Length: 149
Image (tube, rainbow, N blue to C red; front, top):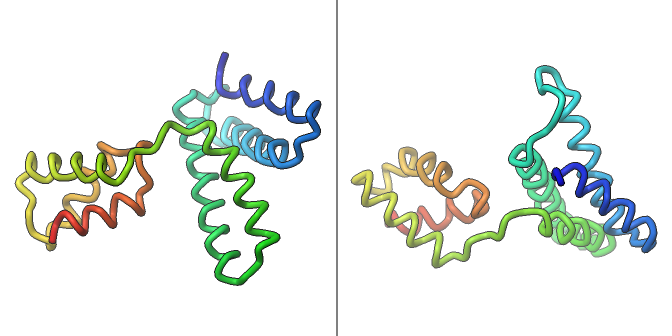
């Protein structure tokens, strides 16, 4: 079963259960997948890997919105964003913890002979390449800065 088929099945289940939060999030995933599939030069179908990247992008948008709404004390809007984010996270690969990321970052730094904080620009693309989808870019950046001190 492809990722798109799984989302369509989940939409049907959410509709039958009258689960508004899941339905809202799943419909936004489906819309993003359809938009990507019909975009210029996309081909006919979206691979599961492309679908995961799309869901990661949607999750990142929800996290940013959630932060903004919390800063502005808009708990009603923050709650909706949190509900959708929770649904998106079900479809994403498990994220690595800080300790696991730090171990991998130190290995990457040693393998490439990077030790100075001024080499952050060299280290970040390497770290993102190895940790893509396994950890949030913001977390990787913060931990990399700590590792280079």
